[in-house]
Length: 476
Ligand code: APR
Image (tube, rainbow, N blue to C red; front, side, top):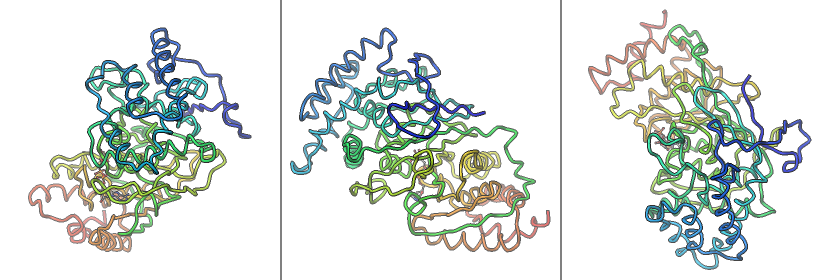
């Protein structure tokens, strides 16, 4: 009975499918995204100021970064001395005239942002914690919402104080991307500007739909891991390649933050932020997705990859346009499926071996892997989830994901991201366990025994421990 809101209007998306189209209402209400173009009285005058500024930008052939800055500050005057635009200025200055399309692009982004009242004329429900719900919108609508994020038009979204209305939501206005100059910011901006170039050009404008689904695993659906009789499912391990490239067609795991997208609008550039920068449509999830709880995940179907990249973190570089060839489904969505699950962030590494935490991670992974109605449920492409910024043990996280996939009856492709040692050791322990028919429940009990051993001696290695002790548990 999951609520599924479809934001498409037949006028804007000429589909032969039976898509529910309700004429939208402008709901200035705590269950919906508060829109900059809302008719709520005090917002109306704000949109008047915004649209006046954007119209003046949109009417120009070229606009400078200074013009963009002035427009944004005009309707966000409180932040005049707080927001900096140095990264955007530097991007513009450092780009050779022959390649600098930004000055002609700014007016086009402004024109796209101005379309908001007509493009998104149905209220966008918030995907709140504790409720499974989905939203489908067109890629054009997403581009319009992101154009508004670029021009920082979303109301009530500029403060992160704990009592603020949207304090449980990620940020959405792009101001944090424009300031605090760093090499990372410049590379990110190159990717984001490329996205806007594509979506504002009639010939490359994307024409599909994207669905965002928040799934909440109820307590009754949580497996009793200790007595789980499932056998391990198939596992493919490789040290080469990346989830988002070699995992095409599979359910691709986003090593997420509970605030979806993590530091994508700041200086973060790890797996999740890179994914969001090369698939900028994912960023719109930040507009309506409340912080994920321990038993929740977000599944995004249909987003498009616009950019190629190389490197990771400080070495990340935008590597030019990417031609996404993914097929589309009967809803005109690209078949790409991204699963955002946030691992726990372990300040003290030893904490992760506590059963409470292991069970949390098992349920989190299972919530994403379990498979849902209306999905094809392909194999899962993942890797060292929670093992970088979040300090997890790759051996433990590999087993946890293997157990969750076994319970969900889905195969796993595990990308060790260049870690040859992990590849070999995981292959060996998997082969042993698979040959002996070790069940998820047995593995769970082995993990329970490992926990005190690890607390006594932090050098104990999980795979060695399992190899030595597996027979003591396998009969249970
Ligand atoms: N494909 C496969 N493996 C990858 C890829 C990729 N494209 N990118 C990175 N990895 C491997 C690297 O070995 C990395 O150290 O996954 C490891 C973990 O990646 P992190 O991004 O550090 O993931 P995590 O520890 O879960 O940290 C999550 O970082 O990006 C932010 O918003 C995110 O706050 C969250 C935190």
